[in-house]
Amino acid sequence: MRRKLAAGNWKMNGTGKSLAEVVEISKDYMTSNIDILICPPATLIERMARTAVDSAVAVGGQDCHAKPSGAHTGDISAEMLTDAGATHVILGHSERRADHGETDADVRAKTQAALAAGLVAVVCVGETEAQRDAGDTLAVVGAQLAGSLPDAGVTGGTVVVAYEPVWAIGTGRVPTLDQIAEVHDFLRTELVKRFGDAGERIRLLYGGSVKPDNAAEIFATSNVDGALVGGASLKATDFSAIIAALEAA
Ligand SMILES: O=C(CO)COP(=O)(O)O
Image 1 (tube, rainbow, N blue to C red):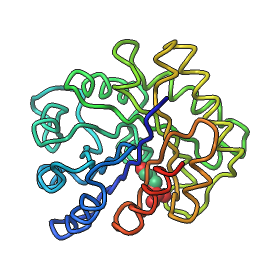
Image 2 (image 1 turned 180 degrees about the vertical axis):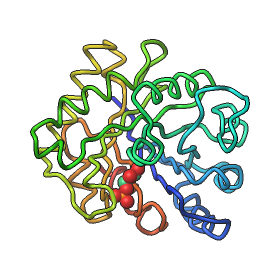
Image 3 (image 1 turned 120 degrees about the vertical axis):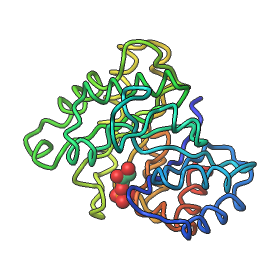
Image 4 (image 1 turned 90 degrees about the vertical axis):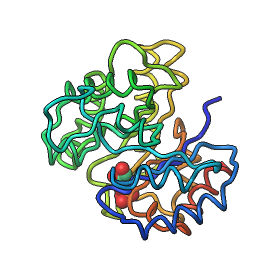
């Protein structure tokens, strides 16, 4: 059995005031039968980790550098995330791939760095609308998956894969459940081909316009082990509703 994971990605949103939302969620979920994760901007990691201490809420980063330290102004290493209280890190999000030109090779190097620092890597893949329209979805996500994961150290406990169609992010548009199942079943097959039993244990999250009102049906879909939630993770009431839907799934 794969343990379910409800993950929130705050992106470039949130200041100290926003920690009030985490106080709420931590109160609601002192314990849970699923894993709960919030990835705030780096400036909030340490405070959020303190806020969520003794609750079921884990804290993660949204990116890390591939090197442990050095002359890389503005960057943050995996070790620094761990030091600040993070246990997870999102890597290869489509916004980083687009805004910062991150390639699969970059994501793979970052994933290696995250694993070396003891962080769980949440590695993102997903097609653009043009790629879907061209019938290339499985080829695109398959290539991203192959290129973004290292050969060593990948287990159900160290890596999570998130499928986030770019056209569904922040748009209110969601693939059909059949489309989600098709991609998640494909990713599962690819993971098992490459990693054997470990590939069976790697959690697969869906991300892209997950809201309280569509969460339950998405969570009932084949090979969906949870969600990576953007906008709806910023409000405690919305994110709690999504957590509750996953607990009940
Ligand atoms: O990109 C996402 C999470 O990483 C999804 O964002 P939205 O839930 O706002 O569509």
